[in-house]
Image (tube, rainbow, N blue to C red):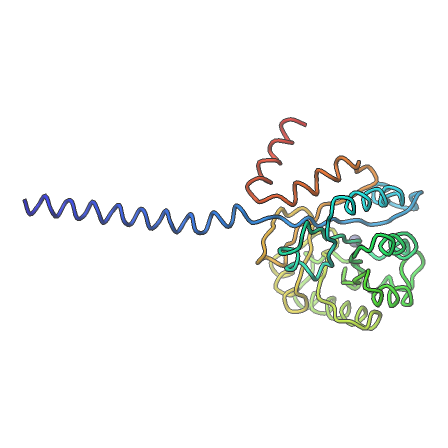
Length: 268
Ligand SMILES: [Zn+2]
């Protein structure tokens, strides 16, 4: 009888332990799976005719306007790169980013931002300021003051960060922050890694200078991970259909997003 009771008690204890483990797993996994994604888009140049290099990096002005039209008509809220956390409480958030700091950010993008009352972030290479084809100090200052554009870092020299030592990274980031703070009159808090390349050392140094680090297609979306933020590229050959689908997919919860990715891979 005693032995029977002991066995029963042991069994009950085992069931309780299993229930606690399941509850703990669920408490972690459910919010993880249901956490929404924030669509972050990466552009480069806006020009009718490609100038040099990869022509796919040149979105047409009309293409950008068509995309902005879509965002406006569908009630999206544009946010700056440094407003990443705010995006989690915004209605239909989208973060628009433009890498390298081409002059067409001033001539093509800026007028459209004013027209649509949208925000965008230009990730500027410090060394390119005032160079031919890139933004001038005056253009940067005017846009940074306007409330439509945030100018953030794309390093000082457009280098492959993953190939640099801790000391080199420190110098690169320090110079970039100083260049941009001088040009904009504002603190620099976000960086986009050139080519999307980073490693553990890059992350360590980035955390010393910036609050947000933007990469490319990391597929890491998390409110708490500010340094491997995933961005999807928008290119000359991106159709409006593909644009809509990307934004919708990125906005979904993790579980739906992963499923959609598999679905599109199989059925497209
Ligand atoms: Zn770049």
